[in-house]
Length: 355
Image 1 (spheres, one colour):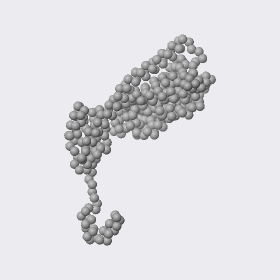
Image 2: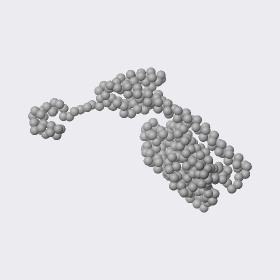
Image 3: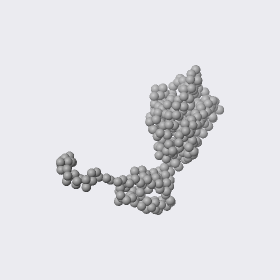
Image 4: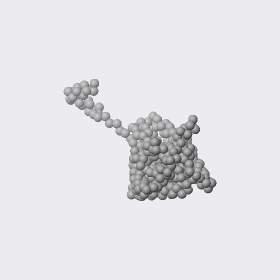
């Protein structure tokens, strides 16, 4: 069945020159193509940077759609499959220059913004891109395959915006620039790792789809064939190397979720019997941020601290924000008695409305 599908969807070799011109910015309109690429990349970076800072998912998705960074990456993949070292080198250089440009522009846009206005701990548009795991690699591999399939077929090119949203190339680089401008080295490293994961995954899975589709050069000598194998081997090795920190990050995320659930259960047990409840709970490593709200007397925080330390066998730092609530009845019982005694008509209206 797979062979029949591949045979039925073989790449039309007559479309190859058109595809190369489109991806590699060649031909009569090459200058305009590069100019349009630069304008779209600049606008996508601006939209992505401010969207990430504002925590606006819709804005970030808009930046993903217009970001053209997928084009030179696909051009690199296609050139490697064809054994065209010249086009591969030129396209890869364009990817490198674009990457540096996006990071620097994002950092520049963020310089004038106060660090207090950027929540590196609570902004999900930042947090979701600073700790990639194996699922990010799986998504990148699938997205790279989908991108190569859509690019090589004019009939399904309308699917490219969806692929751009799935692969998310510019937003991680924006987070790198934002983090660097505020000296958040760990967040910058995590976001850069996510981008590199996407990049090498596209090269591997996209190249595999191009090859399975039947894209091949008209001729290929032994030297070009050797260089193509070397390029793909390097990409596969990079994916394997990247998967190691992704696996570690995924394990740490699961471990953190397990510890957070246990800590939350201990906190709920500490609050049981009181008039307080949890409104916000965040455990990161050994730092607990806790917000509670309620009435009456609050339980002794020292008991919570001792319970957490005893359970995890390591010191836990607690930052707690407790909001006491006073319940006021108006009119008061005294006021109601006065109304009933001196204003019987008003009292009868009140009781009739209540009933």
